[in-house]
Length: 291
Image (cartoon, rainbow, N blue to C red):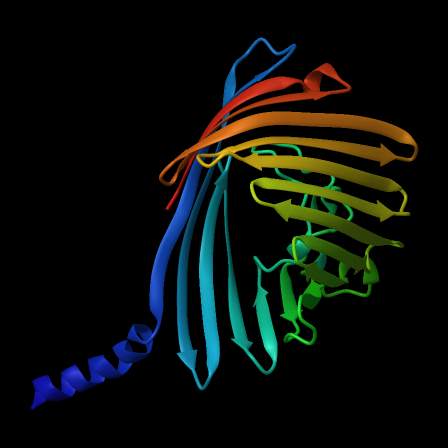
């Protein structure tokens, strides 16, 4: 009898866990770099490990994950919980949850290594929050996706308002056939300005093209733009990306061109970067495995 009771108690605790489907995924990336003017050949590495769980309950899809990352020897952990249903849309909340503007940017960021400085989340205009909640509305119009997010920073318990701030962001994506248009804005209490992001992309067969612009009128007055073109030849991509960063009228330009080749879950690539300064110029050979 004691064994039966013990088994029943154990089952009561195990059952909720077994109800969820648990998956493990991740990726590893290593890149050999050679910048012009730099006498040393170096490498960078990027490792991610993700444990995710999902289940269906009362007509609601429930998901959660824990993400551990390592970037050049710096380790961090983050996570997210999501709830979604046909009637109310999707709610995501966590330390890894994107602001609405970050959830739809990077359209023109197609280079395998570096670049991406034209994305709002990488230009210092979209400061990180400790926890963010992202809401995606249910489908109201075919092809239209609307999103809104709220982020809160970990402030101090004092009377200084600068130590406690929130971040609000809104985004819209409209897809018509092969054409996709995007617009987003973000407002941060710690900044006296808002950042906007606009992008358009077109995809037909093996060809993909995109153009994006972000603007803010803050102290840095950073305006960015990027254009990319990708050709998928079957086993990989031939790609190019060009970006322009304008800070208070001082303009800098960078470009990248590369080719990738995939073998199963392995992605190999060779890329050449060039820019206005010697430090921006270099060659990179990378290998990435996703599982």
